[in-house]
Length: 311
Image (cartoon, rainbow, N blue to C red):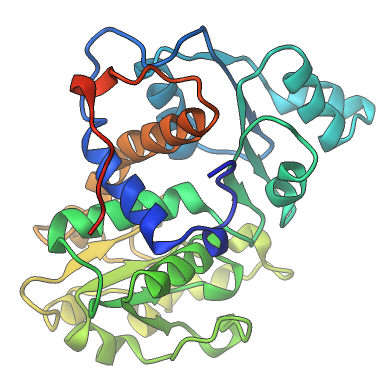
């Protein structure tokens, strides 16, 4: 694995390797798994709280120095291209780049041009593979398998990079994926069945809600907030019809009272804050795996770990 930019490129074996490796990233023993000082270029061209902060924590736990970058004070304001910015970080010694950008396929294109590993931290309405990985890990902690798992992805499907990455990866792992949303937010490029949320809550093991991507809509219509929850969101009444073992997920930030009733965000079936916690471990795993593929890790880190065998 040379880059981590799209769930279309990751095999079932590689996904399970990363999920199992995440279990080993649960602590920091004060040492570093790397043979040399590494530097991370975190190039965030869009706002981010959870993704950016969890990458910073993951990097520090691995002994990696994060290079300071702020889009509002960078040379992009002088007309520098995305490629030249990335090439600059590569030239001054960045070991890998974490990139979030508003344009689809930005990370994928750079992966073809840049010699160091690229990690896609979200590209427009394209994909968000590290968010997907922490979602997968959260499901694995709960159910220990994916084959036959029924997962409903609910909300702003058309504009959601989280929906796209999760749908691809869950299909690769053998889960049954269902989509649920208002008709104008359906995405014909995603070949998965649609169903009403009232039906989905009765048969699905995972209800994965999505944030309404208002900033990506061509027309901003705040009137939807008055009826969206009752028409398309997870209300307390709908949650009462969920399977006893089913879990609620959301990539956050959560619009309480819009996508989900506020009282459900931290209910016993919710794993929303657990997802955030798992984001550090899974991003550590991605960084470690990419660096290991480049031959720059010590072989005896994490309790002299043996190669992971995926059955």
